[in-house]
Length: 217
Ligand SMILES: [Zn+2]
Image (tube, protein in one colour):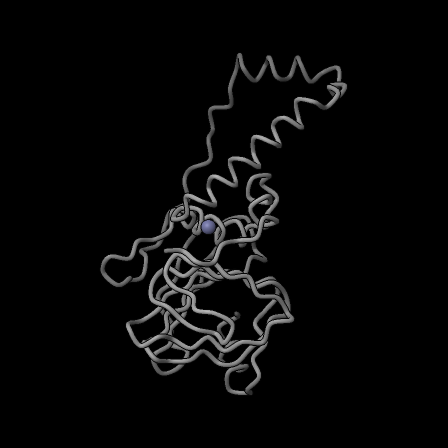
């Protein structure tokens, strides 16, 4: 049962296609497992369609029609080839990769502390997207931190408590610079989260800051 969903603002952004590349991937991963939010996005999309239909038609550049007709008569044949995907790192059995990561490269798991690993997600054509996976062992705690910008999280498996609430598989969280939290894992198994951060995590402790800056998260 999903308890935490993206805000209407984020779902509206998903419907309008205005989310940044990192946010679109994390919100997209939530939508894949949440029928309630998919229905909201569909509702926003149909409202958007009605608004577009009610707008006055814009004047087209004189050559636009000719260019469009030429495109239809002679469609460009050189389609960009699909990016070559590097092998994906392992996941616990029964956990699937979100489809929103289909075009992304995902690095191997890197050590970031006892029972803690991370993986870099490289988003095509979005060099400044800071997207990564965290894989934390049961009962472990991530270092206390805040954020220089909005941090979006989708829980792929396992669960954690961060002092505000319990987050479990399928849940979504948005935390901004005003939230200082320390996610603590439940003891029932490891937890994997997909996260996108605008800016970087800001850790309280020097050692966590050092590991965080090495990892580039
Ligand atoms: Zn939802």
